[in-house]
Length: 110
Image (cartoon, rainbow, N blue to C red; front, side, top):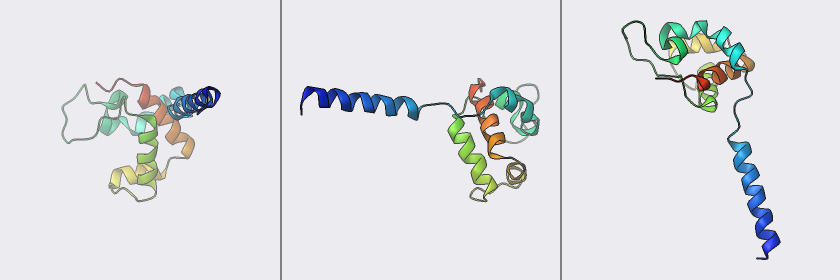
């Protein structure tokens, strides 16, 4: 393979790698406003801090935005089964999901 072809392939690969790790298109500030339905179980910023855990729920603070969006979509389409999450996800638009995911992805999750 000639040198210009290798450089071109490397450049395209780098471009794909950078765009593949882009953040969700959501607005973290809007997600913070919408998170009132999440804090009851997941706690402030996606983890329980101020009161004891009565039952186990996933820590969503600091989770990848793409994962959170896929999980919410799965609850909305019944691909995942949890009564509370299904009811919450049913109320969310795609933009709501992206905003919440952007907010929680930026939270520390500690």
